[in-house]
Length: 145
Image 1 (cartoon, rainbow, N blue to C red):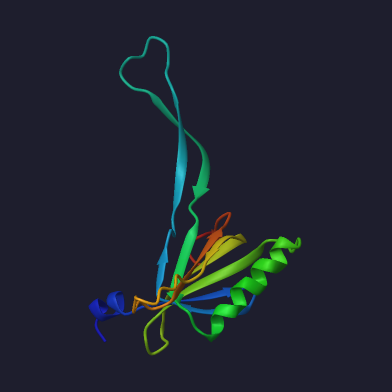
Image 2: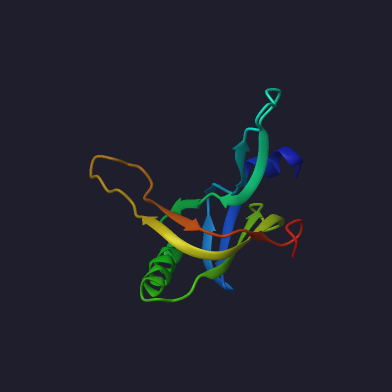
């Protein structure tokens, strides 16, 4: 398999606190941003100071066709609604034959939204679901532990 093949054929496996929630066909929102505060200095018209304030993490959205594993997420979502604490999650990018490409660890994960399939008798679309998760940072290799 070439590097080009790996970039095209990837699935994303979600695990929360060691509990697998299945494989997903798309993953978006893995990212972070350093929020900058601008400060103007009196008498200095050459530039504006850019001061780092905090890191913001974007929500992660995972989508997949409805499968047997689809019943796992609503069960976890309901537990969080009843006061279960935030969790740790891992998203693994894997090839179709199951080889790990890379992974991302997420700290303090909470479910933000679950969107189920849309059904229409006149449509032959695959029934899909989307899971949206918030988190407070990454961990693992390259992220400081």
